Length: 380
Image 1 (spheres, rainbow, N blue to C red):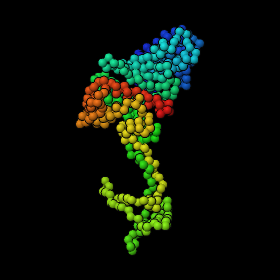
Image 2 (spheres, rainbow, N blue to C red):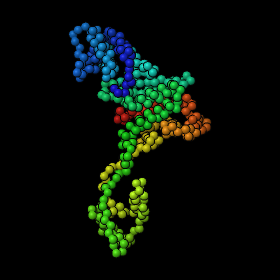
Image 3 (spheres, rainbow, N blue to C red):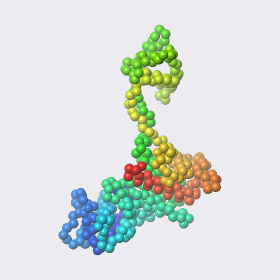
Image 4 (cartoon, rainbow, N blue to C red):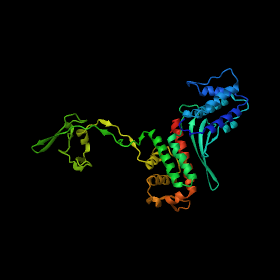
């Protein structure tokens, strides 16, 4: 449950009270849900023969515990268990609509946590520009699953701060934080497809290094190999009509450490005679940054569609990530978009237009939610 924000104790207690009131005609359901929610704990709750209200009081006492966020986690699991039971067995005087309304928790920053009919917890930030409503709605946990995490905590931090920055009148900061969240999402998505962001990981296969002996010869030089090669030297230039020699090109290359290597080109099939075909390190497909990630995700793998992120947002997103993050103001004049009549829009103009930033934030949030749901469900 790491994806959940910290919920204050008063909000947790108030939420539990709403369910206690909702289930006032069927309190045994609360006890059963608590018993299910604590199953496997060292001090699991077990329904006893005593007064039902007193046993609910015991649960409420547990709900108030703040160490290790115990009360918060218990409330979440009780709500999930109650809803599962409601779908199967029903409850006296309880409707789905009333149940889901009781699960809503409005946090101190105005964002909302709520359990939805699809049995997932949503964290929602409502936004508004010029009377136009919008939202960033992220699914953070699938109910009754362990661990059940959908959008991870390290991404949610950027989204939360990005939305806060936008509401505080800092659109450039908001876009920067949202693009960081998007890049992290794409990293996770592309890693499931075999791509790597790990620095220093080779993108191409690395082959075994072998010894070559160079001998002085009366007419020049002779090379021999103490170990076997993929092809034997007797087969080289042995076909009818083959020339007596082939010319290659060679040059010295100075390395950063001051040493030299020899670079040979135009080798034809000589590599099978002069080098090993044994791979020592397998190359991994590399992603260099957000621009490359968007290109691969959209054009190679098809995991980003125009429905997820409209194509005209690609350049603004990349420009923000590549420039503002590195504190460079030189590129604020970069053309990143065009308006509906074809006029160019610079990065600076984009960022001071609250409507454009609003659209981008809502779109990025939606794309992040879609991608992590596909990762969680194995449908990416």
